[in-house]
Length: 530
Image (cartoon, rainbow, N blue to C red; front, side, top):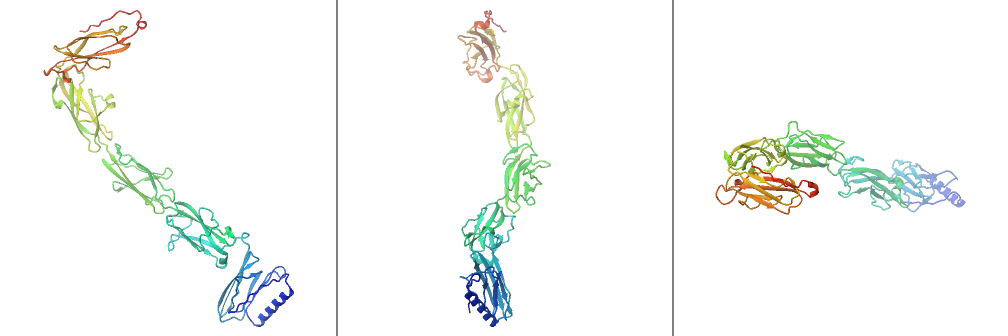
C-alpha cells in the first residue's frame, strides 16, 4: 500500500517550499485522484495540504501539522474500501481528528474535529457513566435506593479521542487522585465494599499532562444492605403483667431506604394484629380490643425496608389478671385453744404466675397489714390472736397476692380461746419521772405456782424463776422499759413453753433525770396495782 506523508510550514516559509507544494497539488489533480485540502484563514495562519490517494492510508503517528479547516474532495471512486481515522497534534495542544471512508461507489466527504487546549474548554473524553449489579446484572438507577454493594460501573470512551486517554482514576465519596486505576471502560467493586448510605462514585480521565478534571463523571449510588432496626420492645420479653390490655409497642426505623409498611407484619399468638405506626415518633403499637388470653402471649414482628431487607423479632410476655384462690384453718381446724398463740394452715393456688405473699389481720380491715406482707408459706406459726388475755371467740383474716400483683378476696377462720395460761401484773415500780438511779419492781400472776421472766430495756429475757421482785441499781439517765411475764407448766415437763406463758407481758416505763430537771419534786412515788 502506498503511503505519503508531508510536513509543510506555509506562513513565513521559503518560496521553494511553496513551489514544491503547488507542483505536487497539480500533479495529483492531473492524475484524477482523491484530493484532501485543509485550508484555514489564508495567509493569516498555518495551512496543511494532505493528499491521500484512493486506497492509501496516512501514517500520522509521528506527524506534527498546522491545521485549520479540512475538506474531503470526492474523486472518481475506487473499488477498494477504506476507513481512515487521522489524529494530528497541532501546535502541541490542539488536536484534529479526521475520518474518511470510501467504497466501490465513491468516497464520502469527511470532517475534522478540532479540540481546544485542555482546560480552556470542556472536552468529553469519557461520557455516559452507568452502573449494573454485576457484569451481567441488571441496571442500577442513579440516586435510587437498592441493596447491591458491589456495583459494576461502565462508561463510554470517545473513539475519536481515545489516543489522548492514558487511563482513568476512580474514587468513592472523594475527588479522584492522579493514579490510574484502570485503562478499561469499566470498574468492578469487590463484594461488600460499599457500606449502607448515600455515596457518589467518580471517574476522572488521566491524559499525558495529568488529571483532566473538566471531564470528571459522577454517579450517585444509594446502598441499603441493612435491615430495619427494632428497639425497646414492650412488654419486656418474659415479663409478667396483670394488665390484660397492655399495649404492644416498639421503636421501629430504617435509616436508609425507609420502612415498607405494606410488607411489615405483626402477629400475636399466630394471628395477624392490626398495628399502627407513628412516623414522627417511629413507634409501632398495638392494643387488643378484648384483652389478651391468660398466660403466655407470643409476639412476632417482621419488618421490611423499601429494598427488601427485613428483620424478624419475637418475644413473649405473661398475662395474669386473675387473683389467687385460697383458704385458712387455725390449729388444723380445732374449735378451742387454750393459748392465744396459734398456727395458721394456709391453702392457696394461682395457675398462671403463682402465689407470692399472704396478708394477715385480726380485725379484717387490712389497712396497715397490706404494708407488711408475709412471704407465702403453707404454715404460719406462732400467730397471736386478737385480745390474747381475754377468753372468747377469735377470728383471723387473710388475703393472698400472686406474682403479677393481683390481690385475692378475704378468707377467714375462727377459734374459741379458753385461757389456761396466767396473766401478769406489776404491783409497784419507780415514779414515772425520778432522779433515782435505782429501781425496785414487784409483780404477780393470776394463777398459783407460776414462774416469772423479765427483761430491762433491750436486754435478754431472764431465766424463769419463782421470785416476784427485782431491784436495779446504777441506772443511767434517760428513758427505761421493764417487762415481766408469768408462765405455768401445764404439761408437767418441767419447762415453760411458748403456749404456757403469758402472751402479753406486763410493762413499766419511767424516766431518770438530774436534780435541775426534777426541780423540787424529790419524793419517791410508789404505784400499787391490784
